[in-house]
Amino acid sequence: MSSKPAPLAERLRPESLDQLLGQKHLTGRGSILRKAIENGKIPSMILWGAPGTGKTTIANIIAHTLGSPFYTLSAISSGVKEVREVIEEARLKENTILFIDEIHRFNKGQQDALLGAVEKGIITLIGATTENPSFEVNSALLSRCQVYVLKPLGKEELTDLLQSALKKDSLLKKRKIELKETEALINISGGDARKLLNLLELVTDAQTDPLIITDELVMEVAQQKIALYDKKGEQHYDIISAFIKSMRGSDPNAAVYWLARMIEGGEDVKFIARRMLILASEDIGNANPNALLLANATFDAVSKIGYPESRLILSQCAIYLASSAKSNASLVAISEAQDMVKKTGDLSVPLHIRNAPTRLMKNMDYSKGYEYSHSYENNFTPQEYLPDEIKGNTFYDPGKNAREEEIRKHLKNLWKEKYKY
Image (cartoon, rainbow, N blue to C red; front, side, top):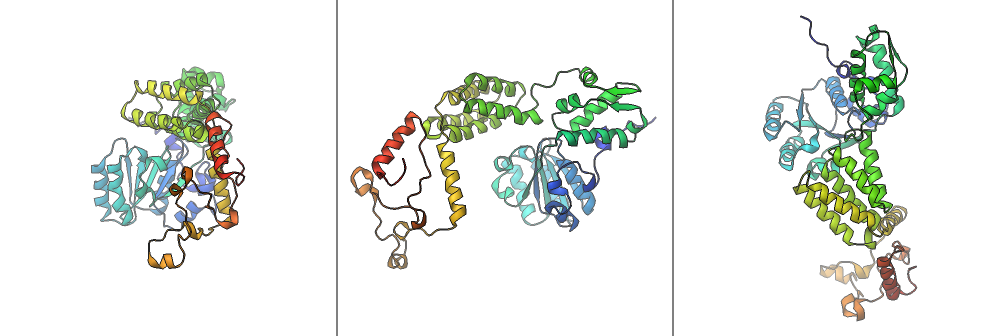
C-alpha cells in the first residue's frame, strides 16, 4: 500500500537560502543574517512576521546548513517541562538550536525558563512570532535576541510561487495544468504562502486534466467567498488600519463596523485594545486626557474578560475614542524634539538644573541659581530649562481644541513672548 504524499507546501519547502521566496533583506547575498549563517555562528533571534512569510523555513534552513542539533517546540502545546527537557539534552551537545513557534504565546514563567540557557549559550534560541515582540516577549529574553522582521510577500512573489509549484513539484509537473488567473488564489490566501499552496493543492486535487485554473473555479472549489476577515493574513493589517483611521477620523459608525469584523474573525482582544491605547495618546492626547485613562482601563478589562463579554467594553471604548476631540500635538512635539536631539547631539544640561548630591558637585556650581517653582507666586518662575544652544525652541504647539486652547492660554500667560503659543 503506497503512502500518502506529503502536502504540497512541505514538498516545496526550501532547503537553502537561495530557494527561499522573498526576505532578501535578511537572506540575500551580503545580508547580515546570511553572513552569520555562512560563518557558522548565529545569534539567538526572534523572527517576526505575518503567517506564511518563511519563519519556520528559515529556522529549518539554518539548522540544515549548520548541521546543528535541532529541536522544535510549539508554544501552543509545550510548557516549562518540555523546555527544560530540551535544555537538559542540550547540555550534552554543542551548538544546539531550539526553535519555538508562536513564542508570543509563552507566558513569563515559560520564557524565564529559557533565559538562563540562552545567557549561558547552552542553546541558541530561534523564536517565531506574528505579534510585536516588544509587547509579547519579556524584556530580559528579548535583550539577548536579535529581532529580524520578515516582510509580507507581494503579489509578484506569490504568483512566482504558484508558477514554480506547477513547474517543479514532482506531482504537479506531470499534469496538464494552465494557471490562467491568480487573483482568487492570492486573495483567499491573504498573502500566506503556505495557505496559498494548500489552496492550490485543493484545487488541483479536485479536478482532472486538462485543467485551466480560473478565479471562478478557485471560488467554486474553495466553497467560500473571499474571507471577510483573516486574523492571520493580510486583512489582519488592512482591517486594523481601517479601524484606527475610522476612530482618528471621528466616525464611530465605521469604527464599530471594523471592530465587528475583527470580533467576528476572533481577533485577539488585547491586540485590539492595545491599538486603541496607542491611538488615545497619538491622535487624541491632551485634547481629552480621559481618553488615555479609558483606553488603559479597557486594556486591563479585556485582559481579564474574554469573548463574548469583552465586545461590549471594546465597543464602548471605540465609540468614545472616535467621538472625542482630536489632537496629535504630543506626537508632533516628541518627533520634533527627537529630530532636534539627532541634529544637535548631547547638549550639556544647564548648571542650575543639574543634580548636586555631593559637596564636589556643589563646589562646581551644580544646582547654583536654581529657583524652586513652588516658592514663587502661582508656582512659577521664568527660568531657563533648555540648553543654551537651543533655548527658545517650541516643540509643543497646543492643538486647536477647547482643552488645549486652555493649555495654550495658560502657557502664554506664564511664558509671555518666549515661546510661540
